[in-house]
Image (cartoon, rainbow, N blue to C red):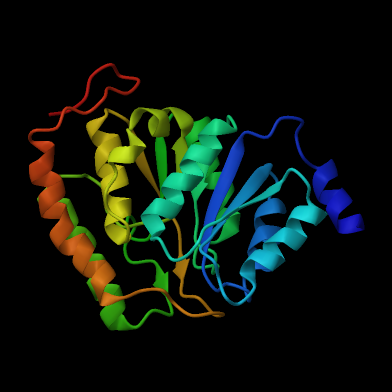
Length: 264
């Protein structure tokens, strides 16, 4: 009880930030990642999207909801429906609850919760519309990944950058902060990809809508607890889907962001 009170007492009166964390079979990490996010000096709320985890992940989240009423939220879905659809559901929930800054983050501590304030400042203070926690903007900042996986990820981002023309080093990054205006503008129901290509499509669409993307260097650490959800099919979607993404953009009219115009 004392721990809960100390966290709540440190918060500002108005909370403007929501961290969305998709989970599937994350019982080893669920409680700790929620505590780590809530323990940041800035007041971040948490929304967990659970895809009917059979290991009891949702029950752990519900315990945290009782400990931190109004700070921790849960959307339970009927099964594994894809990372992209989880985030889309979370974005819509966050917009409906009037958050100004909405974050994506993994549940397994591969994204360090201590980096959340840096992403927040990039948008709230430095004028970025999307702040990306980037593994590759200052080299290759990945810890405990097999070399083959590092190379696959790094060169996939290079490939995506070449095909799409995006000036983003870490195109598949899943750690990011979006200003709410970006998500309101982007026509979320038109986002099609479900795996890692979802992250590419979000960045590509934000750029096409005229928004400013900035990369913030982070160190990505491979999970210690739980099981990775990575598969070769996920990378296949990213590699081949970007061609359709790029060619489709030649005929699509994108809505305009704050600049009032978007690139063609």
